[in-house]
Length: 408
Ligand SMILES: Cc1ncc(COP(=O)(O)O)c(C=O)c1O
Image (cartoon, rainbow, N blue to C red; front, side):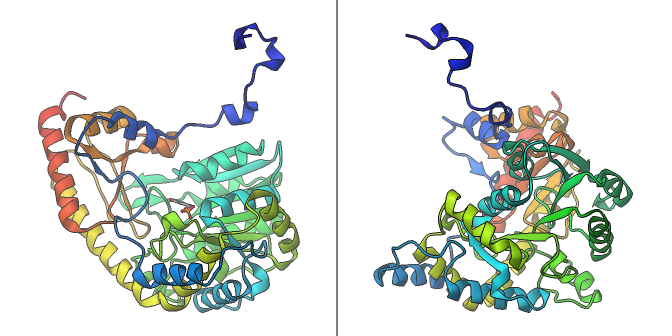
């Protein structure tokens, strides 16, 4: 019997909410490059450097020592304690009761959504945005409204009045990612204060994706606020630990551990029993030896992270300078994350443009439309690599613009 013979209710389709999810446009661009022998990829959100040796060695030692078993759902106690110390150092007193270890940031986002939203709930997200944040609540049947950042002379800015107007009393959750992927926008402390007060008033949950908090270059601004310049402004600096605020974080960016799948959540202690149940039914726990390596990262990684941020700033400034010289390119240096999100000739059809660039000159960058309709007109370039590699990419972009730049 073939599928076409089946009565409609028996055709093996996924749920409507799942079928309606947007496929990854970055993947679509990568597919367009299959068969191109020499692609320079700047499309994914990761560095070209390997994880620091001291973290890899800690994982090897943990494996050699037999760390191959299930752990507590919320993570091993020494890692939760180490993270509590780390978060306390950056954002004020935080106990291990408020920390849950997750299988990286994306799993933390799924767990946070599963904790607080269900079918039919209203969710508001500030965009352009890494697509996973918008799609995850949709898997659960929630409706996601978006509030777009504006692009102008000073780069990306939030219209705070528009955001507050969207945060109606029937809103269940606000999703906010700062420093932001793809724009590099960073929410100011004052904006956070205003949004927190509004959400408190209406009982709206804030899920703050702060996985790029350490990749923050506006030291002076942070210093002026009287907080540590080692991190972007965080909701954790303002909110009590038992409020309706859930902060999501990851080892992927600050310690270059994308492939390890390790992250954490800071949330009210009263949520932890339910969060533990959700971890049980999603992944049961993060891998045991990976958690051991996480302790090394948190306890010995500070110097490394600070060096990484210095190198990223050098790469950012280098790429901004090089791109600024190209005709028709409008680029600004954003205060956070590791991307330039800029406009160039042809970017009003960014998916077609990015496919053409990978096909014609082997330059792999991400289309702005991958980050929602508000990202159309832009492209995203991840600058987490050395300046020689960036220069090679810029040469390809020049070649593309010289050959094809006027056909759009
Ligand atoms: C905004 C944002 N949040 C979360 C993540 C999740 O990263 P991971 O799952 O590797 O921790 C990413 C990854 O690029 C991201 O850009």
